[in-house]
Length: 140
Image 1 (cartoon, one colour):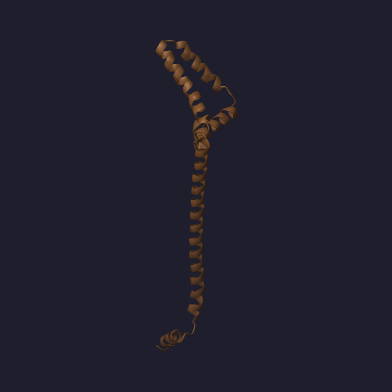
Image 2 (spheres, one colour; image 1 turned 60 degrees about the vertical axis):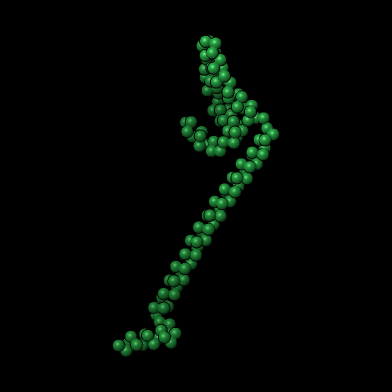
């Protein structure tokens, strides 16, 4: 009973015990760990928000740049030609036109991969399609 009283007296009088000497550094270490985790989470959040802002800025600049550009309309016209030719061929009952369109696509398919990729990137950027690399992976 005297030992319990002695320990209580030490705590009441503010004397540090062996247990307090062991607990304090562990508590400090745990507090530092939690603080670092919170800072890391906050840094990740700030980085993500910065990426979103940069993305929005890029899209805004691309939209402004395309206001005075006719390349979107040009690409849309070029991409519509095969559809128009096939529609015309069906309307006038001329299957030779459809064969010519197929020959054109086969010729495009024979072009080197690097040229096809450049053409794909040019059309994608013209229409502001993001993630063109993901679409290209689906192609293979």
